[in-house]
Length: 354
Ligand code: ATP
Image 1 (cartoon, rainbow, N blue to C red):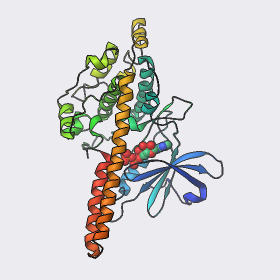
Image 2: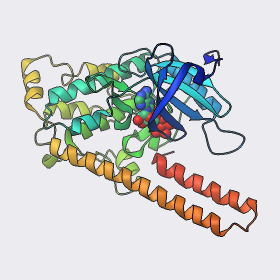
Image 3: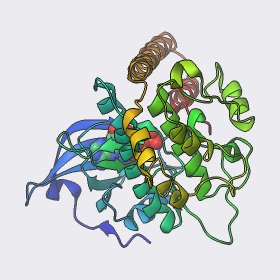
Image 4: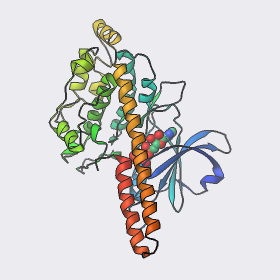
């Protein structure tokens, strides 16, 4: 269904501004609606052409659009309009300008579990809206949890590039997402379900409380092994200020059998999110997240990201030199070296499982 595609041109209606983000096949730019002056985010998704590897397949783009069209919730990004051009599809999205939730928290001096759980609650509210509509996000991770703007702590879930609508007939299996955050059924190529998102919420909560990633190993293989073996613990050094309630919330998400894992409804009714007794509310108020370790976790993450950019630049410059030195070779040879580079950059850029 492509009836959502606008027939006019994007440039006629919007003025494009600065780049505000990029993904695998997409660049996101701030833009302004010419008539109303309202600001939006325009996601320019490059289309795959012919049998190439560059760009997103049209059917994948349409899937993302159809999912976004069903969404209408304060904690999830909304889709405004869609434009189609020869080279790309342009999604005009609600603008989110407050940056990543984890960046915001890393600038704080302290954060109580009460405050931390109110952020997790908003994530759960957004996920509940998706799950009520049988949509599974499949890429819940800190980068996709943003704040609406700098004056608010309103969370918005973004990036529906991997999201799927579940049907009763279809058995969906896929190996995708970012290793640290994926559920055991993803690693083992077993059927995925709404519970797959719940595991990732467990990982996000664990990191938020401790500044440490529960299953991350020295290699991707080790991470996968840790996930399927449920190899995690609440190390006293990292969790000495954490409430039992918070640990119980996480334990009920790190369950191998997706059917036995807490659902989004269970989580919203868990006493860490919705205290019933006074002592639960007090426990949450007096427990603190490990902000020192959280700050160093974020510093390490920024460092890894900048190293990835440096290594990408090195590869590009080596490739340019290679091309210069093979100027005399046939164009066919040049094409194949270009393909090799694309393969490397796409793996590097995603750091993904699939
Ligand atoms: P990936 O390859 O990581 O799956 P993607 O190609 O699907 O990414 P998005 O994750 O949707 O693209 O967007 C890329 C980046 O652009 C995001 O990480 C975020 O920083 C920024 N971004 C996306 N949507 C918005 C928005 N509505 N408002 C502001 N920034 C946004």
